[in-house]
Amino acid sequence: MRRQISTILLTAALVGGLTACGGGDEAGSGSDDGKITLGFSQVGAESGWRTANTKSIQESAKTAGIDLKFSDAQQKQENQIKAIRSFIQQKVDIIAFSPVVESGWDTVLKEAKDAKIPVILTDRAIDSPDTSLYKTFIGSDFIEEGKKAGDWLVKEYASSTDPVNIVELQGTTGSAPANDRMKGFGDVIATEPKFKIVASQTGEFTRAKGKEVMEAFLKSNPDIDVLYAHNDDMGLGAIEAIEGAGKKPGTDIKIITVDAVKDGMQALADGKINFIVECSPCSAHNSWNWSKRSTPAKPSKPA
Ligand code: GZL
Image (cartoon, rainbow, N blue to C red; front, side, top):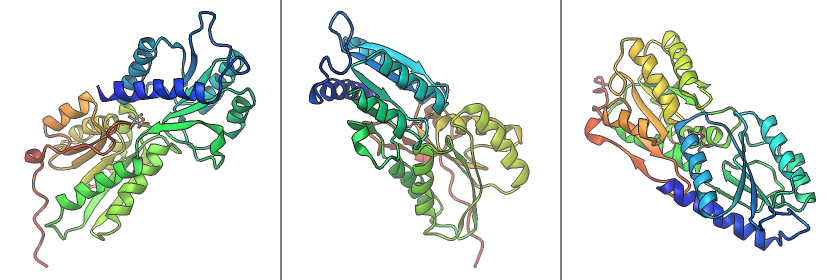
């Protein structure tokens, strides 16, 4: 439901962006039946969150009577750049995209600007200093999401003075959610020396890669207390690896994830994930803590 609202907001922004920047006939030519044509370049289909996001965008565009040209980049920046260039050639009225990584967009966005086609960033931001390259950004505060994850961990281990060994499954390298969720979490746990990130590597936001990297973490780190995964899908893959190693996820190794997709919430209800930070452009600060499920932190050894 929330994702529907966010994409209806997107639709409103699209229409607003179009009229605000006079997207008249000198920009996109629109479709023959006078509908707004929107070129949308999606990151890919790497996670449950992304699949739901795509569904919302397609449904909301249909409801708004927008002619949607949709492209799936399979998590490759070069595919998104190609798609944006194709939308420019097709003279769409407006372009929207979720940038797979933060940098490397200035050239193609300047081409859209020169073609007088407004661009809207959705879900993920870019790091270009030239904010004239896009009309607006609709997305979540990923640093806040990482902070929420860290805040929960600090509370969960408040009564323990023992070292807490953490492994981190990062999202796609160079992406805004990976960079910012790492920063938000890292800044909070840096306040307490007992927390130590013993390994941190990208799991590319996918279940399969999350499982593969967690298997490697388990082999090289015998004493892992906590997994922080930048999304549910990597956390769910890691659960398979943890169980494969004969350990109990949520008990032997506490797990924090971000998103709150259906499968993640089921793992939370089953006690395999301890804390999930919800990720939705409309309510970036919600989080779910099946508190009666979380087992107390390890009792601290006498000083
Ligand atoms: C966050 C979004 C992230 C999700 C992942 O807004 O960009 O990308 O957290 C998805 O599940 O792959």
